[in-house]
Image (tube, rainbow, N blue to C red):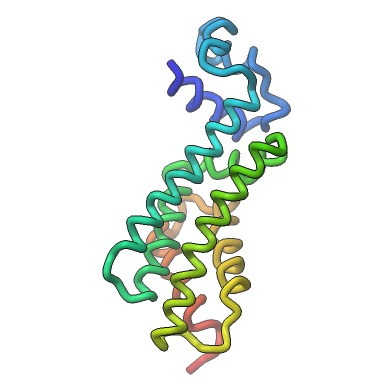
Length: 187
């Protein structure tokens, strides 16, 4: 039942927003009582925090697996971008809730989420720095700005990416990496 509460809440928060979705809306969608909800969660915010933790923890785990592989830095970068795109493709509403509804978490919860988000960004920073150190990437790059630019582009795709659209997540990831590595200049 806990899993059903999470799945239903992700759907409702994604469609209607956190503030516009009541606990009553969640239990009605599930056909259960509020007591069932409160058996698993003390509050709607606690549920929102679990949704956030699941989202970021899955990405951190996926990134860790990629970083442990013996790959070129370009391939690591591609796999991280593709992993995020694949996750958005499979969990679009979770991404929407993660980015759009974060503002409804209390300060203590936000610290935890920001810490995990920073951990993910630092993993990406390490890939970019490794590429600079090995000569795969330009020496004049500002690692933090490049990481933030990559994450900004890829994370925003939850807003427009349609997995049933013209391009799948692999193709979009390839376009992103080509653009990130080669830019707009003709060679």
